[in-house]
Amino acid sequence: MSENTPHRSLPLPTIRRYPLYLREIKTLIARGETHVSSAVLAEKLGLDPVLARKDLAMAGVPGKPRRGYPSHALEAAIVHAIGWDNPHCAVLLGVGSLGQALLGYTGFHEYNLSISAAFDTDATKIGHAFHGVTVRPLEELDSHVQKNSLKLGILTVPQTAAQECANRLISAGILGIWNFTPVQLTVPETITVQNVDLAQSLAILSRTITR
Amino acid sequence: MSENTPHRSLPLPTIRRYPLYLREIKTLIARGETHVSSAVLAEKLGLDPVLARKDLAMAGVPGKPRRGYPSHALEAAIVHAIGWDNPHCAVLLGVGSLGQALLGYTGFHEYNLSISAAFDTDATKIGHAFHGVTVRPLEELDSHVQKNSLKLGILTVPQTAAQECANRLISAGILGIWNFTPVQLTVPETITVQNVDLAQSLAILSRTITR
DNA sequence: TAGATTGTTAATCGATTAACAATC
DNA sequence: TAGATTGTTAATCGATTAACAATC
Image (cartoon, each protein chain N blue to C red):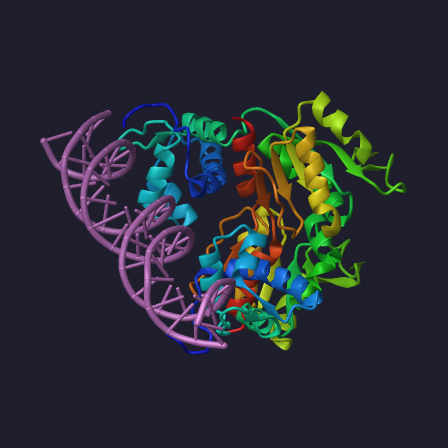
């Protein structure tokens, strides 16, 4: 098909690669490049050029033979495909060491993401601000999520509280959960969960360095 | 093949799932279960039972029909397959906010991993200890890695320093790099890199919550 | 024994890669 | 025009799923 509209459904591997393309495209734009070719991007990312071409084609911006893809339009299309063109707010549950680190992470604004509120059950933390975000009692989660129509929850609670907190996020109206706990969450089909599990990548590393 | 020996090469998806199985197996062992079935593990992890059976079979521990796999032997085999049965030391490069968070993370010992030293170029940090690990000047990296035969490097430096620091790790003798920077590293084939890139999982979440 | 569960072989599926046509 | 690059269709590959035999 030769339509210009981006596809409704994209392969998950493609979506996961989009942020990688995006960084390279931004670098090239900063250098003044008006067009970028799939070959150049593939080379920088260590991908097969055909794979890059397919990925880019799915963004819906037609490229021009001999010139490549218009860099600004391609950037915009990829940003749009991964929903980074309009700002998102997230709530964070669990202000332990990891939660605090995420609250202090300054890089999220690059993805148009900000953490609008943090919640915890620890009375000694409530009311205290970490990196400018005040910790609130978990009881206020529902009203905060609903009042601001928030759709994303970041889960950095202890393992024992993970499923219970996920349930609360879901019943509050959250659609996506960024799960930093090692707990396998049980959620309805309509909820998207992305697990960030260091053990999984470490397994690959420790296996290879031991042989 | 019906040999007992674990395979030399395992599919990467299988290796990535091993830590997940491991957690469930440990839980079941803690409950006193002497045997675990692939069906139970699959159910807990939301996987197809056949997939679990294949994954477990590759660990090399034969299961018994009607009973399942002997839990302790299976645990040991998986731990061995991912190299978690003997302790690893890693060096960490870049003691910024993320580096400090990782230094303070107490969960690595579960994977038999410890961070033996941290390096930075910032003179105000050198000599200072973070969570019990003293920051050393980058010049000492080589001798420390070689003296202790270290194989794993954790990269938490600023983007601009990432490739240069990776090069130093490699020339010091490191075999695996846990790359927490968003830089696409160029390394020899013999070096294993695992990228931890929050943008990639966020892309999936932000895409789904915007439609 | 009967039946649950493992183990194995074949089929399916999706993603990647290859081949080649289209086009600026 | 010639040729580099995109776009598309077909082939390959690897992982997952299905079907069924083996076994305690």
